[in-house]
Length: 249
Image (cartoon, rainbow, N blue to C red):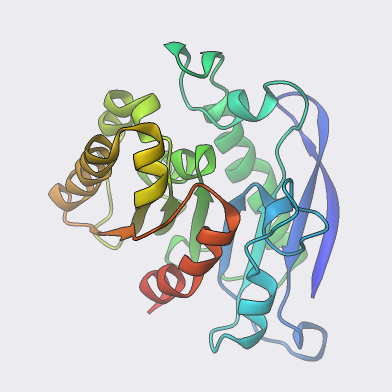
């Protein structure tokens, strides 16, 4: 069951939809559930909502998965460069994406100070960090790494697919400081997207550097190179069972 909830994105004072998955027996149960927060929430559940007409198939997966949970997909801004700014933790100049005015910290503060308290107050959740994860792809993957590092007091698990690490690699590495050893991070990239950018080795190295940052803090991190994987929802969908099993078991 997926519900759509308008929610104010306070950094811009604009509406952002939350796409919220609830287990199908939610209304007939008194159970509490762990929660995962995903960036680009419109791309998760329904092809009709997805930017390019193909979603991650997350609703179908969760309906058949043995572990029940709540997933909160947070929609970004769709005008101009809103997504780039909202999903980048730092100001970036001179990249192939042009100048980015990083609002990632404001976005993460919005999640932990406004979205998460509302979710925990509105639904039957386990609110503690051990039962809370964060996930995303591309710029959303970058934000998931940032969230797992700087906001580790809130998130114990992160799925970071095809993350835009190289956009701000050094700054991102500097965020991996006070990390609870009870942290799991999944980092992935696809061979075809790396070849397309001519940066296959650099992409693998950037992901490994992030993993090593977590390993040094005695946290868990795993690396997955998807053979034939491209920068698209259809290939990220194929990774869903793998990263969910890794993060939650």
